[in-house]
Length: 346
Image 1 (cartoon, rainbow, N blue to C red):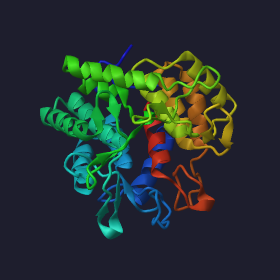
Image 2: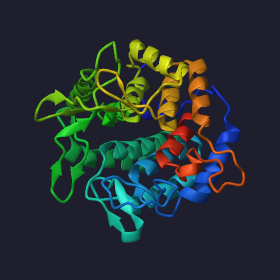
Image 3: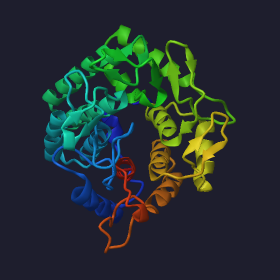
């Protein structure tokens, strides 16, 4: 059934008990990753004068995922405190900066629309579960502000630049957080039509039964879907959003089942389904687990989670004990750790 409310997504199924693994993971995050301003992108202190965030930079993505975890685990006081800090670090008025460099006290000029939607979703889940009207009001206001620059006539821009006053011409299909969009756009006939257009954009990006995932993005100027290789975590975000509203295709679930059964869910695919990178990601397997849980398949959920926990560092003498990461590289990315934590809530 389609999601009636964003808070329906907090109704977990008790498919598994991963208390021991979660405890180790949360201890690692609290000791090594969570700061007063946000969550480190990576345990490793890497150089980050690059196009993508690394090392001890902070992402609004991480903050949104952690806020969702705090709601799922009913840590309401911590939720309120962390949201207050999230605003201090990332708030740009109409949106949240996607990235912050603590050493330079620098906010980047652009948001990432999915990250904003994750934070808004967390606010509304909190409001629903606690019956707190001020947080509902905050969620509505944040959504309305975000709409102004990144959404129009069914279009979702991947980002908006507050200095250039310009939105991206393309929209990542992974950024269509359909459950959140549906909830906030159900208040009027005009907005309902916008949601139906958004859903249509995602559905029309389907690559076909032979490789049943979705194109990475849609370009509004060229009016066509990207032929770029798929980052599997992003591709599965698209599938997760469809699963949350009961719209995931059976052929997609069957493909995903085969990859998990064979431990062959690789990091990158071409649009025709050929493997581009044979690396694996805990985050991708965690997304697969969530998709199976939402589709009431506990057996495949456990299979996927078993592969996720293989990435947990078990050496008690290691400073990375409990992390989802690669000890020899001193790498533990916030995304993989937080996606694992969220998947473990089912």
